[in-house]
Image 1 (cartoon, rainbow, N blue to C red):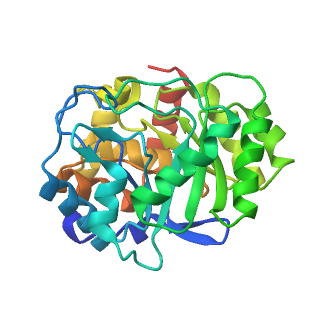
Image 2: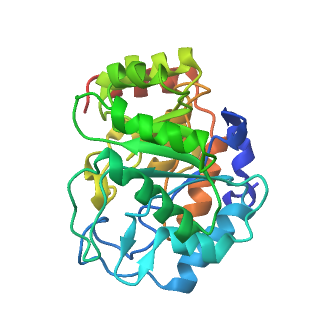
Length: 303
């Protein structure tokens, strides 16, 4: 079986509230642009037909969980609008998760974090762009350690009003998750995490599993490259595991992430159809106990 025929279903499933998703999903951050660093004002727009083709191929490969945001855009291209154009009318099993918190202005410059009274407008912006009458999952993205109860409370009210089905958090700390779970259910947490990336998150990953909350790492492949993408150089241990399985290092990173627990989801993103198939195929990669132990040791040392 080749990567072109492996389905995201091979990764197993998890439930975001009442919505069942394959654990191998798709992140749309880099989709609106071609190469270079994402989320910058001068990003080069990706070819529209190429982006639409990647989205449609992702669904053909069994991806039914797409992560996006209204602030994922480059000049001429918007991730949400590309998703709408490529996939609407949406498949019944497709779950689209978006996030709100810190918007960008039309030039691409970051604006201050949204005040509570601005959050409804950001939710409605996602609704318009995606062509939906409700959003499956909305993550509140924040920076800092202060209380997020007031802002999360606004989203909880929009959930009660039927504009949002489920709520999540992005870039948060354990005490913030505990704070808002008293307000409304939380189905997922999105934080930066991967092999060697933030081993301090290990305990939080376990806590989310114990609570039945999905943990959705971002930059699991890019690592310290973050918005700029993977550096192209990998630790010899990762390369050795990749050679043993005849796969790419990025696939090892994705597989290791999924091995962290049944509640851990993966959302690698790309605008390249070949990379897409490779990422999806990583959901079928089963690492041995010895390989996991070696990679876990590497991770703990934050190489």
